[in-house]
Length: 444
Image (cartoon, rainbow, N blue to C red; front, top):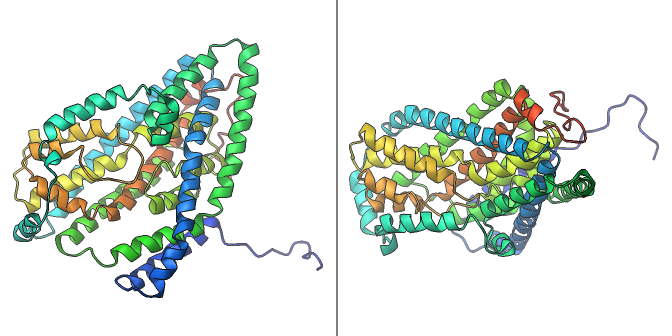
């Protein structure tokens, strides 16, 4: 075959994002059409289910090693433990500021939106009569205190390998940071070889990430098919209203992150959008921000040109403790249930609820949602029946998709804003030279 003439444009292959979106639409349509039947669609879904499980397993397999290697490489490559502390402190302050911003937006919009839905307490009471609430959830105060104490004690893992098996990311991250600071205190003769090894491991991990992400369209199709096949058109009535309102608020706050990142992060909307899109697709299908870490790192480095400190420390830290969804989702649920249950809200009730959710948002794992068990005391303190919380959680799988999307978008937004700060760049210059390609001229 003769080569294409000089100057002749070669046909462009569809991007991975486009292929994944097509797979998303195809899986959703096929799943809805096959919902409620025992025909060929369900047989086909059973056949391809292992492919989706393998893709998720591969993402989860890479997540913890990627976090450990990139965090160590970022810490060892900085000027030392003081720079790491300054960087982590600024990241946490930025996380808190973004959480408060999301809270203000939600409190301004959610009460107005939920009032558009006519309160139907009779329907909710009928559903509550058929809802069985575990006794453990009816005694949330004691359980909450025990959970807090257990969470604090679990910050120092007794066995790091066991913590890795359980997926306890925060203890692993703390252990990794301590190990990185210890390595940074070694002499240059001892630290130098370790730094080179870690940099090489980080590059090797990125190659593995590319291999797994190349299978994204297949994974997206299978997981979307299975999800749509199981849910179909079940979202009706009060549950449908809740799913629509909560998903809408999550989408609104996600969209607002784009101009925020463009202005404060000194980047273009299109560049940021292309950088975060693969991670959003992984997040939407797996409902796990941890599983999306690989795609976040790749987008941050290859599209935005963020420094190793941003991809190696800020992103893993954000995945672990920074959850914009907790603020938006819980505040929306708070106002929605208060409206439906005709509970009068006062300023102290709203303030107490907001403070509780802010604290909880820093200690929620980046895994598919398992309900609002930990936040139930805050709802009960405001006078909202526990049955109402349990009922809306039965359809949480739908808004949970958008919860994970806003989390990964917020994480990359925070990393971009922080890495484009002059203070950040001066604090995280690697000992061997300037940071890696912090330019805004990354490929369009």
